[in-house]
Image (tube, rainbow, N blue to C red; front, side, top):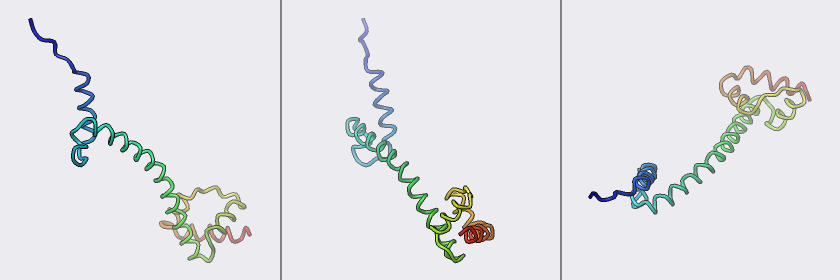
Length: 117
């Protein structure tokens, strides 16, 4: 008579968790109970980070647009208000890219915005 071997599912779950905590410091990488706690926390940080990333990029784009505006004799808020009035629907990501890579087109936009006052 052979013995009953158990724990396949549990072992697989533990293995899966410990694989995800690879590279963590100390017992957090090789003790299941600690690993599961810090793994959940890492998921929380990742979720928050995805939201913060959007915020950070928007801030960067606004800074770039404002710098380019000031080089062309206006400010960010005046430009955005004038673009809205004139019906130009470009988002901040595109405007920031234009400000960095295509200064001539951005200069035309600021001129259009100043004319729309």
